[in-house]
Length: 493
Ligand SMILES: [Ca+2]
Ligand SMILES: [Ca+2]
Ligand SMILES: [Ca+2]
Image 1 (cartoon, protein in one colour):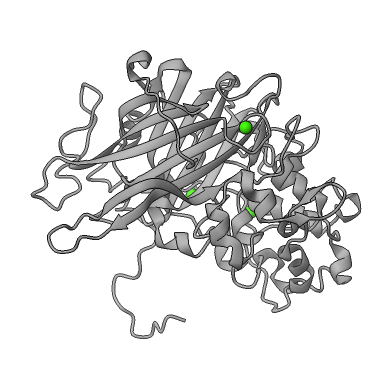
Image 2 (cartoon, rainbow, N blue to C red):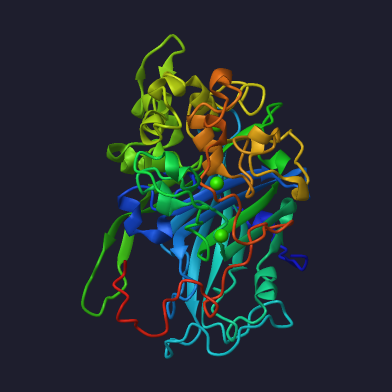
């Protein structure tokens, strides 16, 4: 994306002071409540030193899981009544120091048609979209520092969904028109993209199945390659590239990153002709995401909704009890159910049962998920809290050289030091939970350090430059369609 629209914004004119109220993984359908609210459902957060601009950090957060590209006529929009945020803690106290906020506004040019677009959508000479783009969104991007909110950009464009080959024939041009350079060296994008997460959900959530290891499962099946359950689906992305100096404080290069979604406390349905519900009250956090998969597979069902409502500063108190002489511990991380399940599910691969995985307390997992790894991505002083932790002083691996196994492949700029799009967090976390890392050398052997779901890469090539997330699949070419005619012999089995 080389063509960038530069928006000159008078920062002083846009400076707004406000006192803030208390508001303020991969994670698809990770907790019961949030599955009912897809526009607020945060699927993944990424934070990495930009490989092509090493003095900057790229922050990416995705919402709306499993967007079927053909999902018209009402395609996928950000929620107007939703506050989308990415937070940065730069002094290790689990309290945000810098928060970026996205608020979206929807405009319908012609309300008398049901059409999302009335003709092919193109980029006009002035850089804006053609009037055929009927239902469109714009957004305001703000930053909050020390309780002071500054508007960074207003009326920023969101590209259309990738409707199909007739409606959005040059999608890359439409997306490029929504890459905006802002004052202070920031680059911003918000809009539909391919979901860059890759995982075999269909097997993993079918009693912990890993297709390549099927023969060793307690309910054995023939071995198979993995299936990327997210393949062919889109998501809504916000991406922001920020000069690193805007994010760090003092001499400590480590930042903590997580995202939240918030809704107004009350929503009232008026009924009758008042079709639009009215939202009021302060924003309340309904979704939260730092490390991928934590709420899916570490947090037990009884705590999942609560975890989404917690702030990191509350993690230690809410999810822990006073324990060992290290002070605060978080039992669900120190003794995760998954670690105990792995030898039960794969008895022939782990013949000695529980003795084949590290015993609790799992201080190695506390490092990975809660404090950062000493000498890699642990802040100088740290309050244990669940967030991505990124050491911004570790030089990025060249894009073409990135390895999906991140830190486990010796790339210190990869997960769990922050998270790059390439990082195979499923395999890395499976191996980490099984003890297959240098933290626990006696367990850093096969099969512990070779676990994987058989899905190694995203189904679309990542982009070498901002916003790095590939273009969305288009609806016309969608890959989830059924047969053209009903086959009476198809009983669904
Ligand atoms: Ca802080
Ligand atoms: Ca994908
Ligand atoms: Ca994988």
